[in-house]
Image 1 (cartoon, rainbow, N blue to C red):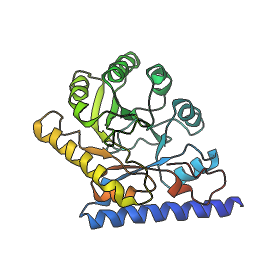
Image 2: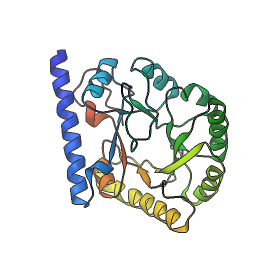
Image 3: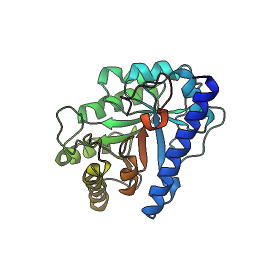
Image 4: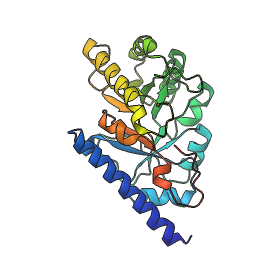
Amino acid sequence: MSSTDWERRLLHNVARVRAELSDACRRAGRDPGEVRLVAVTKYVAQPVLEALLAAGITDLGENRVQQLAARAQHCGPPRFDWPEEPAPEGRGPRWHMIGHLQRNKIKALLPHCHIIHSLDSPRLAEALQQHATAAGVSLDVFIEINLAGEASKTGLPPQDVHRLVDTVRHCDRLRLRGLMTMAPYNPDPQAARPYFRQLHDLLARLRASGEVGPACRHLSMGMSQDYVVAVEEGATFVRIGSALFEGLPNADPRSV
């Protein structure tokens, strides 16, 4: 496949995903501007990342710190702004850490990424607070919830979220932005709907009780197989890989 062919295919995929996100928002009575597309790039080559940036996708996600740091070094100075803030000029992508984060990898992550979707324990929150204080930065975090109780996935059971919220409340370098989940894999996207609805309802209860502040209003949920359903259930961040890279060379179908 020539460079022109794969670039054309990538732009087609990006346009299709954006159109489906917009259609899902309209069905749910939502503003499409409420949903942020995070392109998960773990299996694609560097030229594809550069083409994504050229296509206007500025939010990139990775599952592993080492991979994220290596990619970030080739994509220009990273952005550390929250997506709703005015974008700085002349910067590279805004990186999102979406996979399990080990405490001993935090120091390597912070020069490149300040948005973490996978906070899953008080110990990790305290370690992030310590490293962020030392680096003089603030971090935007999502608490990861394992709604299905799958042993193969990280994340808190929903009944444990209150303790972690309390820990984050005492960490002045952490800004709690919302909750994250991954629904169990199922070829039928509708099978994910109950899990996304549960996450939406859990966040609503936390907000109604006053346990979290008004800035904690985001839901990071939905991947390539179920992002349309996630948006219909209130997702504000969707993490999409293979739907963007379908048909491209060097794109592994195991991507999210």
